[in-house]
Image (cartoon, rainbow, N blue to C red):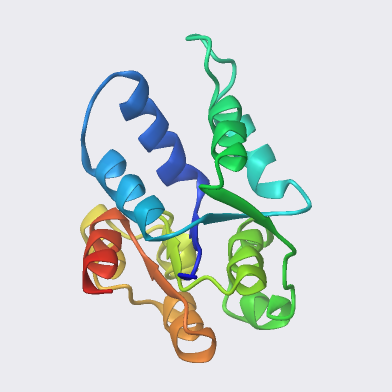
Length: 171
């Protein structure tokens, strides 16, 4: 079995927006590539699903992101895992906001090797107020203390959509 991946809310929301507007752009391409690699992991406590739901309501088109996630759960493209919260103290020391801990907990609990995110917090929370150019470089290089810690200590690569395509194609 291939390793699962974690897709955070910002990426999934942009993917869903592209899907609903029949656009094939970077989020659609990246999410489809990640899903072809293996299951997308979500947590047994419902935190990921709740955040997905909160970011995309109300549904104005009849299909909500949550409906789509349920379809993916039913067809096995998404799988539920128990979260592993053992890295909580280290994540706090690195400055990762508590609301973003779930992505790491899901990745650890599912033995995922990839977290796809466009959120600078999962790379370098201290760069939140940096210019877009600086943030883009950090994300493009999967650098920053959180991303480096996850790679070194847990074998989890944190990358943006463009990096996810490279990650999946290198497997």
